[in-house]
Image (cartoon, rainbow, N blue to C red; front, side, top):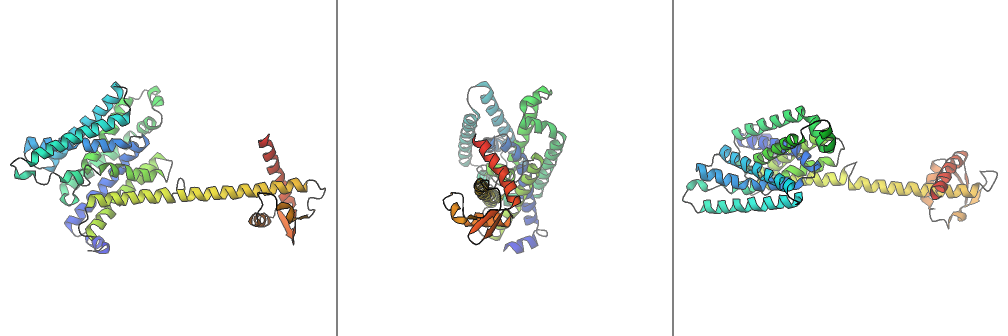
Length: 375
């Protein structure tokens, strides 16, 4: 099945429709909440939470003996929240930095989770098969109830964001100012973190523990390159995340033996790469073009100022001068002289040049600026 056939069947085929909607909603909610994680410089938080959720999944299975996805995700949510609060406690109660706390909790919980999974695999319980899907994800296991759950959580997240937008924004950019306004910054911080944990837990079934942090961070990192506005960044993150889910699912379905989760992450990484290169604000390409333009403008201005210095020694500013006078000037090039002629700053006749009234006035301002800056 090729991609064109996939999109023609996505609205009629139950499985394709369910998986596509699920991955699109997941990408939107993780991208939306990932913006706050990126701007708060908590990029490792998603990785730590996703790994911290693993022992919760294993313990939920041990206690219930069943692979009910809602029960397992509830266990993951509890475990993820516990890991998050442990991270906060380590940061606030000790002298350790946040990256150290994140690394400790990530390795501790993930190691404990792998230990429990190994223990479960050795138990005489037929239901244990398939638990490893939470490590790398398996989007094909999504059912309609999972999609409705994702949609409900996304709606709640959106409502909370709209209700507390001002508080979230102030806390994000100026925590001290939020305190002076009387906001309970601790509660707001816990609220944001809790929704991030919830979004990560929802994605474990689709993308898995190992890759979930990329799903949280990649759309936000891509969106950050295109705008300086928080609202636009959140919107673009949701769009990039949703498109990553849809196109990742399409590529996975159109090819044999391609897991959906890793492909979604790769598509999200492509969005990041394209944004890093082609973004008009921060893109490497446009940044290099601006550097080249600024260098050319500086070269032109220096040449014009040098011409002014020569022309001011004559009463008549249109007095002709030989081009060879410019040959020893480092800023002079034939392209620069051509640009000056196009701007009507210089008149070129054969092998001589002379300043126009417009060029003399502009050069006078530039020369005065250069001499004042040197002083």
